[in-house]
Amino acid sequence: MTREQALNYMRSNGWSEEQINTVTEAFTCEDAISRQAAIRIAEQGQIQGFEWQFKQLVVLPSVSTEKTGRWIYSGYYECSECGKTTYNDTYNYCPNCGARMAESEDKE
Image (tube, rainbow, N blue to C red; front, side):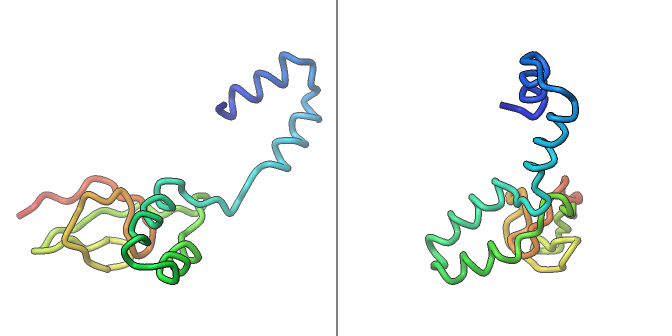
C-alpha cells in the first residue's frame, strides 16, 4: 500500500485530519535506508562475509539525506560523490558511499 492509498483509506473511514497527522508523524522514519542498497549489500555480503556486510549497512546513508552522483569513466568508473572506483557501472548505487547513481558520463 502506498502512502496515498493509506491516507485515502483513513479519510474514507472517518479519520480526522488530526488523527491522520498523529499516525503519519509516528510512522515517519527519518533514518530509513534504501531497500535496493540493502539488497545489494546482502548479495555482495555472501562473498565478502558478515563482518563486511555489517560495516556496509552501518554506513549506508539515510534516504532522507540521500546523495546523487554519477559514474565518471576514465578506464574505470569513479563515483562523483566519494571518488572510489569500480570496474562496473551497472550499480544503481555506489558500493562505497551509497550515492544513488544518475546516468554515467559519456565514455571517451
